[in-house]
Image (tube, rainbow, N blue to C red; front, side, top):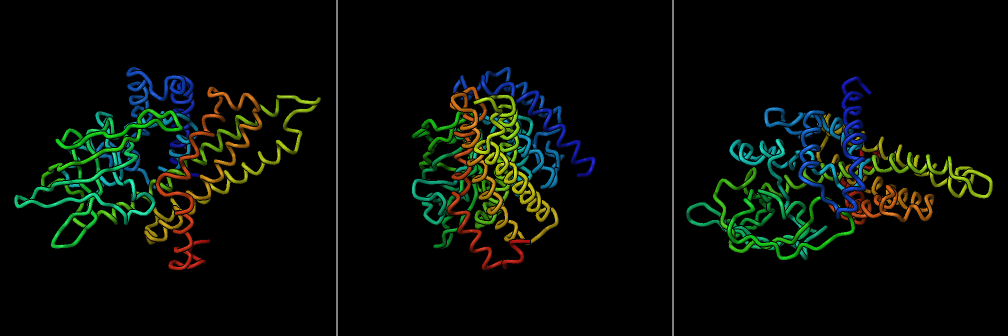
Length: 386
């Protein structure tokens, strides 16, 4: 690791240890939220530490990281629970393809921490298989668009100032996947469900209904019909980010579990001296090390400009391996802590709940296996396994 990477990782680690981790139990016992003072403290500390904005350009308020640098920071953020890192100013990667006017209106304020964006793609019958999407956008004579549809699991949907909506643009009898920047206060948008989920995170994932929502012609992000391509890029980044955070979660779980079992005695011996405890811990350590190397390899390929479809397939591999391994690690950690591991004030209990969704969102483990299998056939075994 070069000096720049080491410094970045150290800054991110210090931020997690000093700012985020001390607030975990407070957030957990408050249903996931923190008061305005703590939110502002996180925002400013992240900006001061130079870890906000991630891979977005410096001229927009980002850091201009490479994918590898971004992975190293996401890994550290993964060591914290309760989604507290969501308070760090950031924005979705699709804004890189937005117009200068869109970037000035939405991206720049988001990277200052002045607003949230959200991404609306999933529907009741269009989750892992987006072909079932029914949300449409009709173009009117004046060039504006009318959006109709319903989106599920819209993270930040109840607090976002702008919603990135994936819809089929109806053009000359064709249905073209297109992304739209839709202000959340547009007439015709309503929250029809905002159910609680297993984890206690700062913001929910409500269901939004769009009824004849009118947006101007310049609301299109990128070009009409470019939505599928931009979404693949988004999925690639999100899946690699999940892998990075799962690696960080395993690192924290292993460290905290090791500290416990090395000092806790049962039957005259340390828990660590029992193979039933130490062997699963060793397996998790091997998983964490292997998953980290796989994720860093995918990041390096992306930085080198490798075939985006190959990177997409390997990002799915990283997400599958790391999310499944992190789930096993959390389960073993809960067992090692015994009754304490079932307390919400224990890090293992929180990760046990929180890590389950990493095998679901941005494509389930089953979908990742399908992608990997198809990538093996289309990109070749050597390319996928080297």
